[in-house]
Image (tube, rainbow, N blue to C red):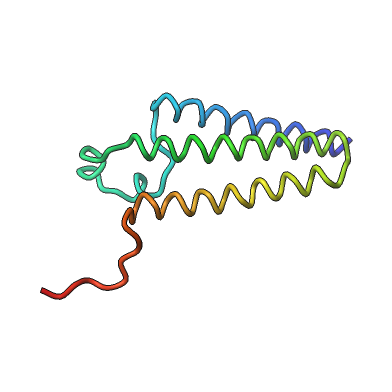
Length: 116
């Protein structure tokens, strides 16, 4: 019985992730991205938000798929589905981290500032 409540909880989280993904694909609302969140109001007005929306849409879509796998695991009680869901969610976190640094540092990370 408790796994049913857990499955419903994961299904609701997945629905929320799919909703955020759908809104981000249509570029509505606020992009859920650290670059946008930590930017000042002036920077937000001048910022190109399209790549931030694309990144957050992809990340939330993959997270929703992983959460659906977790909800299915609670109903079916198979170990391999849990492992698959955790692998999907782990690689989703790595993908989000990689895309954040790809947007923030498009030509690679600059470790030192050049002297004039």
